[in-house]
Length: 372
Image (cartoon, rainbow, N blue to C red; front, side, top):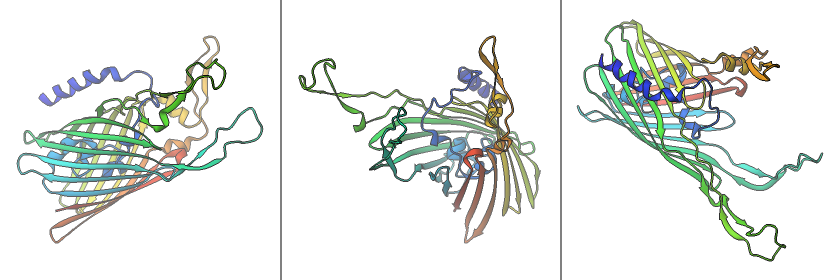
């Protein structure tokens, strides 16, 4: 099948990204990985579904399956008093395809600049200076998806990304490319997407402007300082490849039960397998649950506070023990409820999502989608 040929090519192209270790903390713009919509309640297993306004995030090819206009607003009470907002507008273009416009914003409250503490003294010196700064992230994206046959759809997203901290900023351009295939058997759907493929980013701004001494060993005041500008190390986008399956073992006039499974391969963490379930009654009330598990068992053990196993002969870590904080394995357990209402020819969808973040406590998302 041609669809399998395309998926094989994608896997071959991306295979150098997947090593037996994780490049933790090596990419920026992490806000681009925060899930939105129904998919967030289904363990972030949504690539093969992507049939609503959140397709602009999960898989732009899903836009090709949408035939009505939609406006979606998503609010996320993220960790550490951070707020995440997502707005998407879906506009079908007759038989040509479907266009989507989305805006992502990550904001937080003001933070006070502290003085540097000297660890060699017993007195704490990291006191406030009375000066405050902000940090925020934004992304503006334009998406397009189209059905090329009665079963195959493809889509593309181009996004402008900006990260801001104090008076410094970093900008970049990224793209998502996805495909979606409906086999026609039990609603079995296959999806794949490459997200955040783009340019490296680096910060620039006034805080990088400094005054340097031309001859540091010369007597003080003999030479005037010269202006210099520090250059930051570029960092990559959080590139991720997702492959997903979804099918409906139950689908009739009163009930629909959907099972979704995603395999995720990021460039800055270990691979994960995501499982999501959704039950809908009369297309009005929906219950959702999901879980995301890391495929690296040592990483899962370390998440519980497990200690490393050290080979004293080779002086290297050979594995990890299970720790006592096994409740942290509930990290990325999700659940949600949705209600659809139709009135005056318009569809109103209200969604609430809960996510357990382990040691980082819990997060809650609220969404409103209007279809017309």
